Image (cartoon, rainbow, N blue to C red; front, side, top):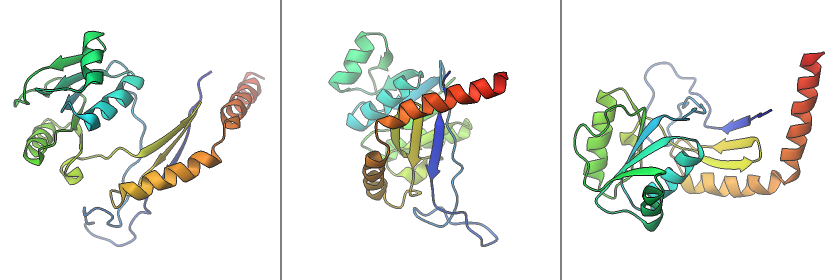
Length: 195
């Protein structure tokens, strides 16, 4: 029985009425969610180290990944060779986001990332932008995985470095015994529901 326990650490919601600022770190609440990307098409524009990290997590999540970039890291090339990723070896073109459910703009050129985000938003798609993050409409939190336990940490874009520091601190707290404890709790919950 697969159980995933989720804890989100985010900035508190604003109590002031009216429109809230979109500046990084501004006092507004982002809506936290975990997406099921199993067999869903995700387009990643970019082929560098950041794109590689994004693709690795997307593959773990079961997404069907298309990477579009003239160049790619050794990892992306290997995934393409193994048929785990579809690599289109050219720059981004308008229309590349057709049939995608989620997009990642991960090139090292902001003007290209902005164009990708603009197309994604026109298509009403979720888009994560590496630089500038504000061009996208969602951010990816710093994450800890321990068995069935997932902890996601966000500072709302104010300080990704602080989020990583907090993740390292929490990793020491979530020791190896937690997955086993979660399994026992899941078994007890199932037994209780079956009775």
